[in-house]
Image (tube, rainbow, N blue to C red):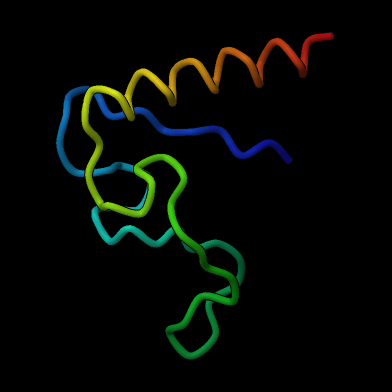
Amino acid sequence: MYDMAQPAAKPGKCPKCKGSGQYRWGAVVNGQSRHSGACHSCGGKGYQDESDIRRNIAYNRHKIAQICL
């Protein structure tokens, strides 16, 4: 599985963590995610600025190039 960054269309709330700063994945047991950590798309801030968006786009291009090799 490849975890791609989710660049926002414009600066503001992070679409990957929905503004919480915490990315959650895996099964949900009793309303709690089994796994969580700081969101890498926004750096744990909950919002993306221009530099975060540029970094995410560059990361995705790099990741796709690695997959295609």
